[in-house]
Structures are given as structure tokens and as C-alpha cells.
Length: 256
Length: 291
Image (tube, rainbow over all chains, first blue to last red; front, side, top):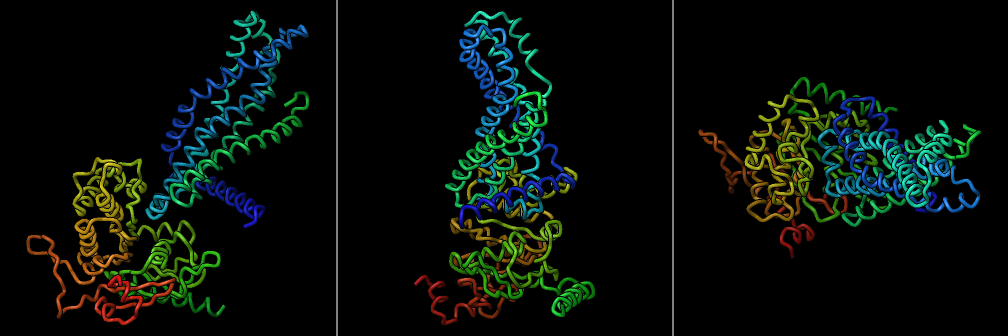
């Protein structure tokens, strides 16, 4: 099959999967317990790596930017620089990439293994829709968990930046906090939450689709897992560009 | 238009027959000129057969002959390109997911490797269908224990699938398939890779279902000992309720078991096992004797 045709087929299949999972919400059973379990596994399970990631990203931002700010005598704006970079861009994108690596691969591998061991067929044979039971809860869980994880990453990023600014460059924490508060607009916060909602949907859809379309036994599971992470990561970066452009147009006063 | 009308009329007639004369008149499973191809490769070519209530159809054939595909078609997991598949007189080919779920409740499926849910215990696996239907937990427990007793595995109730041997996994798979007393049970190579005594146990379960529970089934296999056991033995209950397996002998021929042999998407033989053994088709002869 030629690559364009294959791409269009995949887009069609992913859209169809999204539609079926939305439709699944309107009918019972709705698997609330499964949704809670997934939020726990995805959200609580990822908090450690996300917080560490955020903390050191905030730290390195100050580490790299402070000498330049100092050169121009603008070191009191250091907090603003970290806050806007983190909340608008680095927090959502880096958290989504970390979650795509950790959770997207796990979802794809789990569903892929279920396909090759005929557990998905067994589920359907027992009268259960795999989309409603497996896909819908994972989509909801990622849409709920990713914004919360992003907020945690942003918070710890600001703390990391503040600590580095104080310990390595002797910046007064009060000045840092003042700068953060002055620099962050409400539009930054809205944009910083819209992005993870979209990224959560991308990770869930891509990894569920790749998992459920696994063929070729255990080798196929490995292939699906790799493809899920790569495809989700690329889509996150591409979606980030377009979302930033849309948000820029919506909130003209700020730069996303 | 006229063809559609004729088909509708025929289906309505089947339903009326079923209501008037009871379910025995209508075949449990019927394939009418079913065709299926993946890309250029023909998987099934105008396949037609009928399975009556309480009858077992043993589907023989080499790898890639299309036997497992037949089972997936019966479950509605894939749709044919042409033809009709009737379950209890209803053509399932045009059914949507909701209607297929209703049909699947009548069918139990035993997968090749058991296909147990790894994250669930034996109890939860067997109880899966009942949990989905929100049945009362006491009732579920009673049914699960009854089914595990049927497959002689009540001691494994709290184990996880990873702790079970291959044969035990298949038996749990059978117990799970039998929950809800399905009218039809489909076996997809349930004895593949098992030692002969365990394979014999699985076949005995299939014989018991056929003779004592009046279940219709398709038994896909390519192992000849499965054919020998299922096509020539029947089960009876003694006065104490114990099950005994009796060989049909020379004077008796089981009428509730037939053999269907597939090759490259075609049925090349359909009939009794005795007829199969007498056929002079070189492919069948080689398949039966391995040379």
C-alpha cells in the first residue's frame, strides 16, 4: 500500500476509534472503576518522573538564562522567564513526552499483548466491547491526568528555578516570586491547560490504536509499542505548534 | 429487490417454524455460500454447511485451510464478503455490534491457548460474563463453582492464569465459555500442544456437552486422536449420576457428530468419520495417516 493511502487509512481508523469511544460513553456499562484505576496508574504512577522532569527543567532554564539576563541587568525578570517558558511551552510538552514514553508504551504493549493472545477476541466473544472497556477509560484517564501532571511539573519547575536562582546566583526569592506573579497572565494558564488536554487525547488515541492493530505476535507487540511512542511524540510536537498559533490568535496580547 | 424479499420471507419462515415447532427444527448454525477473501487471497470459497441442535461438527484441515476463520465468522468477529450465516435462523451478516452482542450471549468460545485475561484470577475469568451483566455476587459464586466442578478445577479458583499449566488454562477457558449455558460452543484447536491424557480430558468435556447438555458445537482440530474420541464415543449417566464414556462399536453409528474437511477454503469432505476413513481422496488419506 502506498504511504499516503496508508496514512489516510490510519487517520480514518483513529477517527473511527475516537467516535466509537465517545459513543461508548452514552451507553452502559460505563466502567467507572476502570476509569479510576487508569487515572491512578497513569496519573499517580507518573507523578514522580513528571515532578523530577519539571524541577530540573526549571533549574536548567535559570542556569542558562541568568548570565544573559545579568548581562543586560534584567536578572529581576528571571522568574517571569522561567514561568512563561514553563507554563506556555515546556511544562505541557515535556510532560506529555514523558507520559507518552511511560504510559503510551505501556498501553500499546498491554493492548497489543491482549490482541496476540486472543484476549481481545475473547472479550468480544463474551459480549464486551473492547473499545468501551479498554479505550474509553484510558482516553478519559489521560485527559484528566495529563493537565494535573502538567500543573505539578509547572509548580516544581518554578520551585527548581527559584532554588537555582537563589543558591547559584544569589537572587532574592521575593524578587523571583514577584517576577513570576507579574509575568504570568491568565491566558498563559488557559493555554497551559488546553495543551495537555489535547496531548492527553493524542497519547491515548495513538497508543490504543497501535495496540489494538497489533499483528505478528510478540515481535508485533514490540513494533506497535515503538510506533506508538514515536507517533504520539511527533504528533504532540506538531499539535503544539498549531495549538500555539491558535492560542496566539485567540489571546493576541501574549505570545505563545 | 425480489431476492431481498425472498430472503426476508425465508428468514420470517424460519422464525415462525422455530416458534411453532420448537427450536429443534431450525439449525443452530447454517452457512450458505459464504465467501471471504483478504486482499487477493481467497480464504473461504462458497462454503455451505448446517449444524443441528445437539450436533458436533469436527472441522479438520491443515494450517491455513480456513477452519478457524469459520469460527470467527460464527462469532461475528469478521464479516463475510458474500453469503449468509444463520444462527438460530437469524442472518448475522448485517447485524450491528449491539445485535451481535445478543447473538454472542448464545455462544461460548474456547480459544486455542485459553485466552484467559492475565490480570484476572480464575474466579474472575470464569465470572467475567456475569460480572458484566451485573449479576448478584452470590449467584456468580455458585455458577463459577459449578462450572469449575464441571471441568474438575474447583481447587484452582483463586489462582492467576500464570500459575496454571496449559491444560488447566484450556479447561478454565471451557468453564468460562460455558457460563450462561450457551446453546452453541466453538472449540478452536483446544488440544493443540497438549499431552494425550490432557487432550483426552478436553475431548471428554466436548462429548459431555454434546450428549448431556444438548449443545451444538464446532470442534476445530488437526489432531486425529481428537477425531477418534469425539466421533466414536458417547457419554451416558449411570443411576448414581456418574458419567461413562462408551465406544460406539461396529453396530452403532453416532448421528450427532459429523466431520467436515477443509482445504484451501473449500469443503472437500463432509460426512461421518467412517465415510472419511473409507474415502480414496489422496489428500485426505495422507492427512489421516500422515503419509
